[in-house]
Image (cartoon, rainbow, N blue to C red; front, side, top):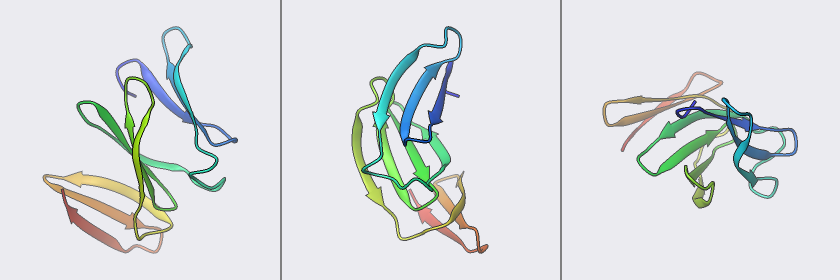
Length: 105
C-alpha cells in the first residue's frame, strides 16, 4: 500500500495503481515487453518521488509514483528472487535456493 493505493500486476503484465477508497485507477503501465509472464512482484520500496519495484526474475523498475512513468529499468544478476529486504543502508536479496546477497545502497 502507498497511502490509499495498492499495486496490482495482472495476467497481461499490466501494473496498475488502484485507489482502494474509490476503486479508480491512478495509473497503468504495460510491462509485457519488459517482464515475463512468470514474473511476480517481490518487493516495492517507496522513495520520495519514485517506487522501486523488484520482480522475481531479476528485473528492477524505478517508477514515478505519481504518474506511473518508468524512470528506468535494470536487470540484476539474480533469478528466482524470493525476498528483498532493507537493513540500514543495505539491500538484501534472497533467492529461492537460500543464497542471500547484500548490496550497499
